[in-house]
Length: 282
Image (cartoon, rainbow, N blue to C red):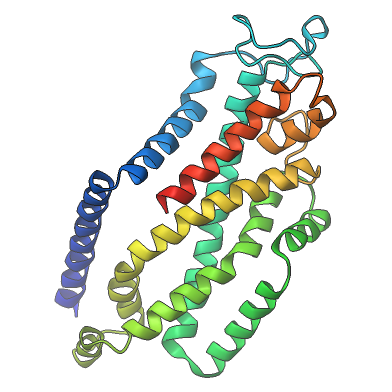
């Protein structure tokens, strides 16, 4: 059994290498995917390195610099409290991307766990999990997220939990379908015949063969989570001020749409560009 386990681990490594090569080939052959990947890398690096190379406080209030248009001193202008918009967008990118990634990983973790159990074991377990999945999908996702954020104390973790709880159901359905198809294949039957446990079959055969599909779904979900986080922040239910988030910036400055449109346009562009890039990559 030890030899079998080592063999399975080599198979997983081989699957990862094949997937990496396939991903690189896809990016080379698909200009739109390459463009989307470039945009995501640029935004991610801006979120990580931007505050280092542009060390302006995103929360410092300057009453002498209220509603200044874009200039050399403030490349994207200032908001209604004199705070630098570029700095707030860079710091907001950290939160928006971090929350979206955390929610995506949380929802896909729940979805994989429930989807594999449902598809692999079937029976009453499958019926119960699918009933719970259908119930979750029946509710409007944003309303469900709002209800969760109202019940829990406000903060970053609450937003991640809320988005994870509204986003797991599609992943569970996807993983269940993949598991049902794969568990009847010959190599799974062969694994059972030579004594592999259910855990080994799931970890070393079913999940590695589902990774590419999971990554596509994850990319698409990242875009929707960025929009959902922005919506919660816009409604005042996300990360609380003065911490900058893209949706929060639009919410706080929406009354200045006509008198100082740069306050809303630039964070709106950040949301649209990031969401579009993730959807295009998926």
